[in-house]
Image (cartoon, rainbow, N blue to C red):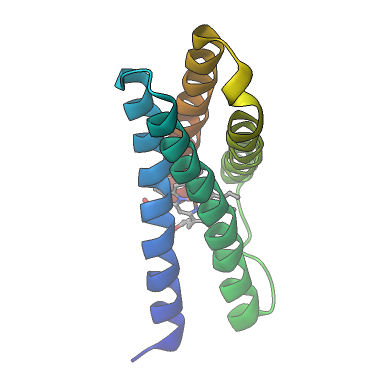
Length: 136
Ligand code: HEM
């Protein structure tokens, strides 16, 4: 079995489930009844998803570097798409952490606003993924 392909495939498994968690968790939370415990569980799921995206995204780069001694030569569109994904992942992670730390004392509309931003960041990253894939 080709170890390089196995590495990419296993990394992609984590990356795919991470994408599902950040998109699905945030979008579902917009429809959930406003129950604090439920929303905290979803925030942990989304926080873990963003962490998984950053770790697995970096692992993609590490595998390429290990096998080729350099990072892939990306087009401008692909670079912008990658930078967009990184910015969304960092912002999403920080925002989910802020929600978990300070959410208890905030209003209902603040909660909804945070979930809206988290869903938008996830949708933006998912869209950027398509451009990274096809403009690489
Ligand atoms: C630090 C953040 C991230 C980095 C460094 C990163 C990096 C990467 C890399 C290197 C690939 C492989 C590209 C290719 O096959 O040409 C990839 C694929 C992918 N990423 Fe990310 N990513 C990040 C965040 C995200 C996020 C937040 C999402 C979704 C919400 C996401 C969704 C995807 C998807 C769906 C693919 C597969 C695309 C395909 O093959 O069609 N990524 N990512």
